[in-house]
Length: 133
Image (cartoon, rainbow, N blue to C red; front, side, top):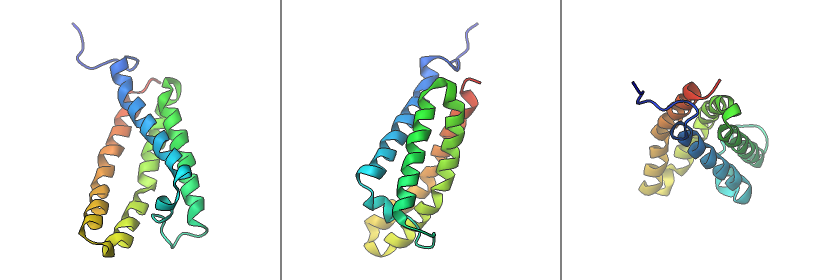
């Protein structure tokens, strides 16, 4: 009897981790290539320069993405992705606050980002549970 669930080392089970890893690496690189939009998301209440947080989160995203791509580090990468998605949530809330006066399209876009974090977190948790140990 065959299982309908792909094994942890099958190509089908690796695709979500590979997609998430590639997405995180791409977004992390954007933090260095075009940092200004990310700087504007950093809450002013944080100490130091917004650019520091932009670059640090870019490093975190690239590193997390790289961990997700390799089967041997996928479990660690998935745990890091969960932590990263939870850690950037305050920046998403800050975007709602700072973009509120920029009209309805900006409001809708920033508000829509908030619940989208939930499937990102649950996807990372699923990758964590199915990653090779």
